[in-house]
Length: 199
Length: 150
Image (cartoon, rainbow over all chains, first blue to last red; front, side, top):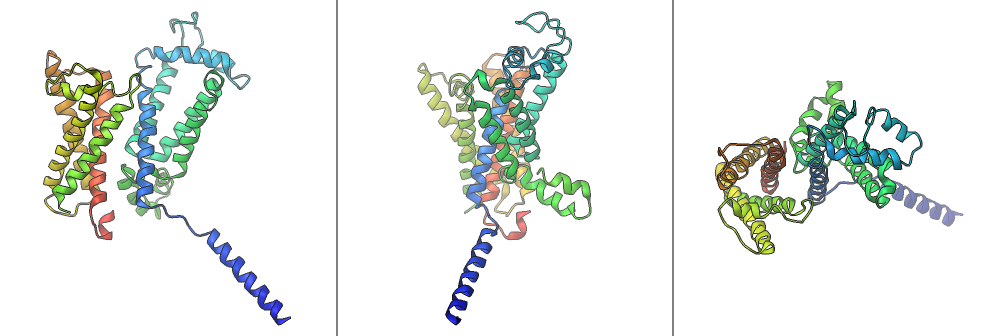
């Protein structure tokens, strides 16, 4: 009986030790953080390069992709939304002339991509940039997944989600300077507490 | 490690980073690397050699900028604010000297300061980013007391 009790106690202690180990916080080393920061910059650069084939003022490079999205989307009804927003009033499949809303909406897309690229490259409110990037990449996945390799845009969604989870801007980025300052005022300022999560 | 040696190492690594960004271009890989040779009026006939030479020239120029960065710090332990700000200023100087003035002079532009939006967008953020990375790396190489981490 006493042997059994001792055994039970040992088992309990071992289980408690395992439970304790399971909740030990993970600390990333400086090298890991620097590596993640480099990945963040290159993902930002990926977004940055894609600004140049759909430049203002006409954003003409974007037009064939919107057409393709409206025809090949994986979600029913999404094509209808595109046809009544981006493609409203369009008379031609090859040029955006006559489209009433294409230029202002394309400007919104271009600006959002610029914000994502600058945020990720400079590590400035990196998590905000990564969330916005995830949304944009998800939209690309919905519209274009079956026009290219299925995982092309899926990987972009996953990359941006990974950068949302980790504060990768706190090395090789402006967030390294910004985050401690926001956290210092977060205890008595609700807005700073909210914003500090994005840095 | 002295500040000059630390600056040199940070500059070489930041130069390698910038050269790598210039390598992973849309279209042909490294198509913008010969631009670095063009700043000094060097033209090589073989495109592959030209790209390799451009790649190494950017690293060397990064090292020079790192030396300048280190020399300005004068053996002091610097804060992250100072490191990033000094880096951004050097990145701005890189853009002004190479991407603006020397490019315009070598292209026989009407003015050394002439600039189009597309060219500004393709060069300015990347050059300033080079400076930011240089400053951040220099800060990381410091053997700093805990209080300086802010």
